[in-house]
Length: 550
Image (cartoon, rainbow, N blue to C red):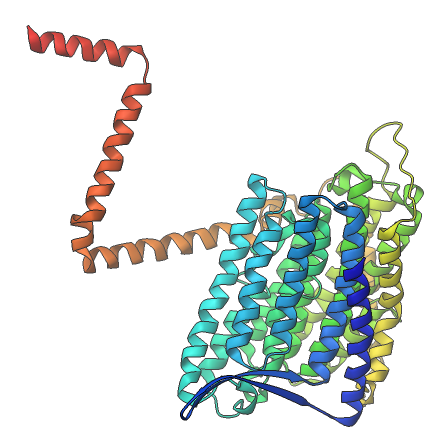
């Protein structure tokens, strides 16, 4: 409770100062000299401007809600729940360190902290599935670290790691390196497979990771490194759009409740990235904030459903949730509608503005079509989820009475629901983003709304189909376009390549100590197999020795 009150108070504090800084166009740099020798100095720099303060306030608000939610969901005053609390706090601290750093070195510290603590949180339940998910999460994020380390070495030649002052001077390749590093954290193609796997974590962690911390770290880094010339990039835009399309399709074929929400996060990250590569940096940040609020609400509501449904995550075994959990279901559906871009909810303002400004951009018809198509698919999987959880016949336990009591979990989702409804318009008016004058034809203006309703209709029809839609493609979409197997194949190729290179270069190692240990291991394995084998090997050896003696 102490941590909840501290974070909730800090949320108001940072939110107030972010608006103050925005009104006065004010930016504060705090420089701390760590050591100085002759002409060499090591400085630690913090930046406070309206972007970092606003993002910190949203992260703190969601964190406070997640912590009060966890007190009921994870339990209180046990060793494991205290460990969980401190891991979550470490996670939040790493994110805050990353947000307020204009220095690439301290950004790497925050990034590494996020990666390592997320591994600890994903393997929290100590099952084999958790360990494998934790490994894929950790190793994919390590790839981003490699890109950041290369960038840090590269920036040495520019004289400083304080990248904010040098954005117009950097080489194009540094920007490409950073974009690819951000793609690992934000799970864009080809690094997408870790995001649904990270669902092995407890639900409060999923809510925090997939709304405002780990996955948005890459987007935030690119917002900080934004350079108009380098970010009008068609190749990267194509990758982001493909991620949107892939994740939306996969969500329509998935039956795991948390995985559907994770794939919708992936789709929204594709939208943020594609708006960045179209040059709309403020809108991308705005969508990041509004998405964080309703996505965390979606996860927390799904956590309550799983909690009351006896740890069941399969949406086919749910049904008639509105009868059992009326308050949770209504909050869940409000956040789901906000995700679809339903008019006058939080997601509508950011999504609609991005789509309208995209249609005013000088881009080809393919990008235009993909945007609207993904908009429809979002509504499609949301209405499918709504149908399975609310209208579907109850296939769970017979004679099972689920009674929703008002506890800390209900309070947290109530606050988040309030923000899911009002946060979008509030930010729109406070950040003055509605000062953009958009003139487009009436059919283009209404087409985003039309696609959302069309998605609702298609989703409803798909839910009612007895034979499953495109049954032959089911395996392809449920396995994320077979991305796991591709990534394994690539890893295997790189491993074999490095093995062959090292065997050519370091032949002495193979014929020396490494070779000896290899043969010793093999011989000991052989002896162990011999000792543990069945009777006939002993009889055979007995016969063999007998023949030799004779």
